[in-house]
Length: 181
Ligand SMILES: [Fe+2]
Ligand SMILES: [Fe+2]
Image (cartoon, rainbow, N blue to C red; front, side, top):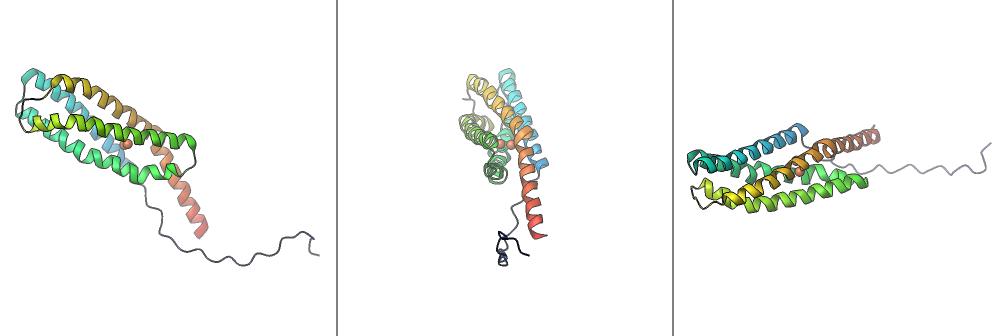
């Protein structure tokens, strides 16, 4: 006999529209490599300041300035853009208040790193072009702040945010598999 409160049978569910798979996360190894490259470039920047102090502006200093300029105007900037586009959204959508707060902090860092670089870049451009109007005292003051912000930023990404992004992506993929199985 049928139970009195048994729910009415559900009508067959309409199949859901198929969607393209969620965009893949970037390879984390490559993101980690970009961090190593940034830290190496900051060391080169520090050596450049010492070199300018010891020997003044010469070909070695110009070559180093060109390399620093190319990195922070190129792969360094692209790395931030890639994180903003491919790593942060999955965490901002996670509903985890602590993670969202971390991502907001990282986004603010990207803005601050950009601001710092805008102050530093004209000096490095001048050195790369062989002009000796650079302000060594300004560079000496600004570089440690720029470097420390990179270190804090990278540490938060590598210890908390990248692992969380990996886990969030794995959970989404597992859900997609379960629905299509
Ligand atoms: Fe970042
Ligand atoms: Fe990063």
